[in-house]
Length: 137
Image 1 (cartoon, rainbow, N blue to C red):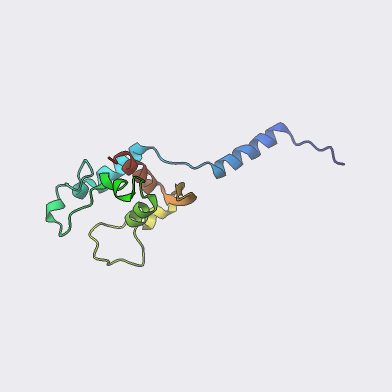
Image 2: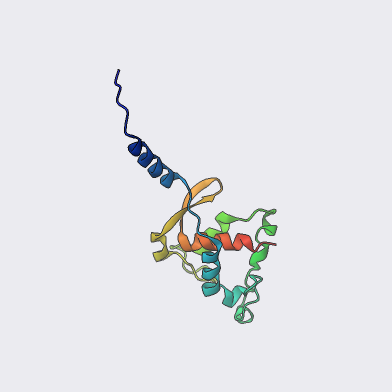
């Protein structure tokens, strides 16, 4: 039988590494609010209700982002929102007016729980999800 006992600092270091790999890191809502203000207000409006300054110029009315949970049985549809906002890189022309936010931002991801699965998500979009969840009514 071996009586090797690793030094306490080594055990602590291993614990920190394991925790860093398993604990999700969600951006705070202010990051999402900033991203929203810079990229979404012109169509969806400050309140998120689809009444931004450019809304009247669009063929289709922007979605009321404050009703996403209500339209989904009271649960905020993270997977749907993320996939719609991020966009699908192979489907550029789907008649959608809203820009896709994928691409280069995919290099800076954080784990976000989507339907019980930690999913690598662009940091900016993870923050936006937190913000959108906060404005549900």
